[in-house]
Image (cartoon, rainbow, N blue to C red; front, top):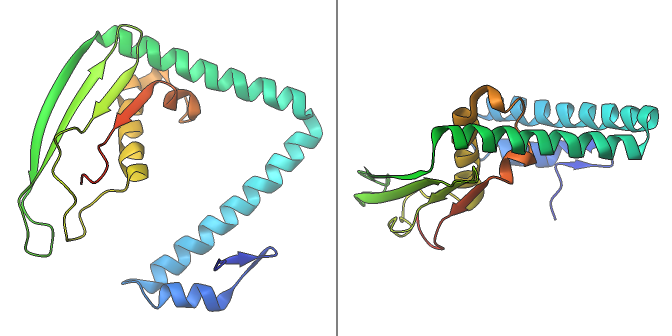
Length: 173
């Protein structure tokens, strides 16, 4: 594998290779270095917290946070009420002269406060660069769920992911 960071140090040759292949090299370089620094600081703080509180208390608190987020999201979605809402939209062009491409979505809220995003019926992947990997699609759906939950969810974490299901047929946009 090609590593951007090895042994705690940024590999400048790899960073420059990445930056030589993007439109705005200065912005990407700054973004990547900021992400690395933030992650490094996060690890340092997590280690200090684990040393201070111990693994059992950290696990208990993390589980409580996930459970509270799940309860809050389910409560907010139950308050909206069960139902299914459908939409169809089009991407006129994929940037490579192909199109249009249809995106179909059915969002379902269940009686138990679950939320399902179903992209069944969405067109197949495009030759151009408009396709969304499943991780990007899931992230967007989680963001929408977070917005709909409002103040009932105080942080974005795996507790919300417990409530949200994404159905995206393989090979679709």
